[in-house]
Image (cartoon, rainbow, N blue to C red; front, side, top):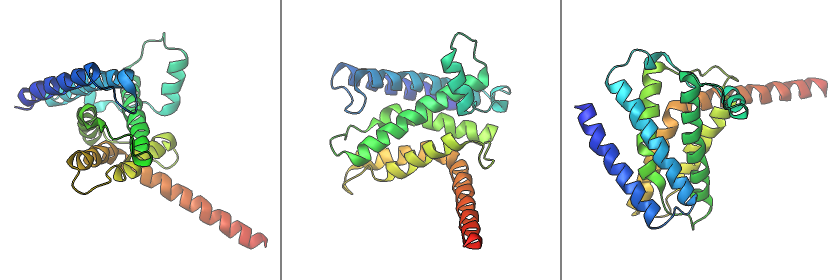
Length: 207
């Protein structure tokens, strides 16, 4: 049933993105950005399909951290493994979402909500996190934590009118994208709070 629904849903999403590319470019990213949404939608649909088929291998793979992804980008001729591919997918999706959420929140001209190109990647990341788990040790995923926080917080300010249905859908999409990483963001916030508290204590003792 899941695969039967995934096929038409993915097809409809891709048709919608093609229509966007042929008519009005996205305000935030333009035609190339919309093509990027097309790519991550395809990857997200593939990841969802693997989970719906209960693939045992994919459930054991966690996305590679930022350092590993950045190191591969400097030498992209190396063959990526599953963790690195998931890391690239995570950063392409969440990095794009963070940029668009910030643009929509702080500049009222950017009101072409990219929910259409983000809901399948968001659902794929959420399902994968639920099955494969997350590495939320304090200090281990700082870049991911800040990116998740940017998507979640900026996304909440993406709607400027209570009756704007597209705006509410965009907020829901941002929360879907950020939800799997909220434990990482919370762990990072607690780590920073402890560091600040210790620094205040040290300063008070010195004084």
